[in-house]
Image (cartoon, rainbow, N blue to C red; front, top):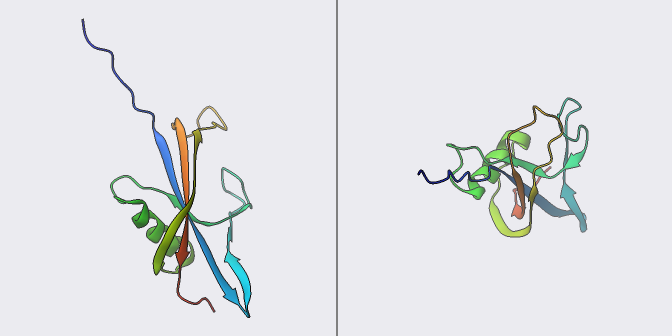
Length: 116
């Protein structure tokens, strides 16, 4: 008799950067708007970030740095701290949606060079 196969849940791991600063002594946050053609949440506002890429990102910090450069062309100087984590079951939006079982997102407060 063979032992049962254990299938590990496939998790989509996402990182987001909370880029905060001040301008004329007023607090400001940097957010971006998703494109109209996005499969999920078109034209919604969100923090810079994206998914961990298997074979590319060995750490969450690597994904965060890469995504910042890809999306806005601004390097992250320092990751200050993790401020929020959420994990939940994946919600399929259609039968051909991504094959994930879980969704995990982590938000980090980061420092970037001054933005003009």
